[in-house]
View 1 (cartoon, rainbow, N blue to C red):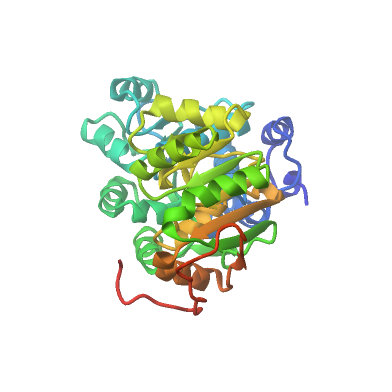
View 2: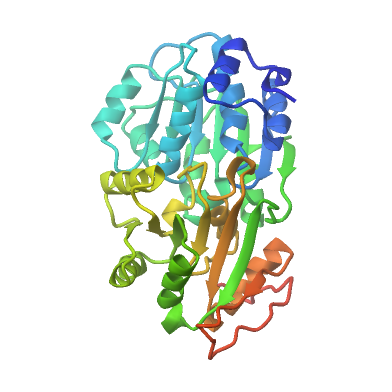
Length: 392
């Protein structure tokens, strides 16, 4: 199937061709026709399956076909959890809408508030925003929703994980009830289901997923003692001559420590985490994307919104919590059908997290051994469908 068969207009098809896209992904095939028909949707699809285009393309077309509204009242609102994702989504809007006369802006914590106000005062069709910054602008009467036609909650599960539920409710209360709403998420959990019930009356549900098992991503783990983890990672990088890796840790101080440990072994790495400025994060990510930097250490802040088409592998130096975060992390590789690998370094202390991840995946991770790193504290085999008694 081609994009033309989905009912998209010639200017959008030309922009897609300019960007090198010819064939829609599964989520795009299912979502675009429904959105063009005016349906509310709840869509579940893994990271890297083309969710952004599945809502941006039909919204652009419907806005282009509609009546242009002048003033501060926006026509489409796309809410995202992080500034990285806000920037990425607006880049997609600019690319896909390059032949249309539509305006957009991304606002997020860390961007210049006065600049945000000035841009909105000029009139904006599509606003991409993080919840906190949007409320700041709304409280200062710098953004209005009278003419809002479309609401998108992108990476909705992540917004809940980051504690945005109160902000989301405050925002939704301000919006006109007559609108088309879309919710996109990699996973649907009970908290998200509850939020969806407050946003939608009769939404069409779409699911494009296989419980986290992507055939184009080779997933495996190595059991390791905590005190030899950095040495093992260095060994894997050198022995396997890795060209590049995005390496996830849980805490920002762990990122700085690992950069130092790798450096002592002759491996140059840098880090992205919440303690670094937006300018620093953008520079490091651009260096990584262009190949100037081979190894990037990141906290969960980089699990969403940082797109790279040809990333060879991701490494879970620390296993994530909650388990759903694993899906978002591995989704940084194997994008758009390309192959990739996801490696997890697992110590005995990680056993409960491992159980939850494997239960979510509905399969055990392949276990591999490195002869040079025998394990003193063995990691037991997980029991699928393990459910923790409480959060750790």
